[in-house]
Length: 339
Image (spheres, rainbow, N blue to C red):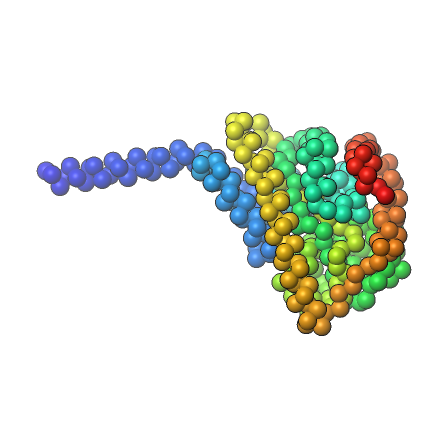
């Protein structure tokens, strides 16, 4: 009898524990990233998912999937809106084919010289509201922005200024990045990040706008692209963390606030972590014989002038693009960043 009672007691304790765990985990979400598994960005993003669980007391569990797991990198917006995914962690440029404004806000090439400028624009300069005005008609809600930071530029040939971009076969995401490089004389093509190494190796392209120096180095890019430009002269992508709008609207305020703060904290951590890695990787690459090119202030100014012309041209692409352009120019002017 005592043995029977002990077993019942044990089963009751286990049942209560399991029920408590189930109650604690109230929301289970699947987010897909635009980065491949093993990529430094993806590994850091996984830590974001863990942080969300911790700061919500286990109420929110996020399964973060690498690029292409459920849908293609250009289809996650539709996947989130349709409920195939709950959210995504992706470069907003990939959706410029639907609405040109996505390309302009995602990467106004040459606008930002420091990640904190973009974060401030998003958090305090109207950028967040602008993103939601763009995303919500497509069934998504913008939680927050991050970025790997100012990107380096991969190249198999020496590049010391704008003139060297003439005819350069290069990878660039569609939207503003492609437009600016085309205006500068290059021949950009749209390829997913997962195809950059193979395309460089096979000679399909000779250069690529991809990601930060340390990630390029870790992936062996500099074994074939031995003339990187660093610090980057061009790109700092907005990586959006967005969720299905109906799902967002159904969440209690404390969970919404926790998700927003988690992205803000993650963004700063990602930037600082990758910046430290970049410094170490640049030194290591130089020792290995990689020719690191640093453009002069004059050449950077030439490239930015080309970019500014494309921002203005892009403003005429749609009503939403005009709104993005006005918000961007206003912020840059008010903060003395257009000089």
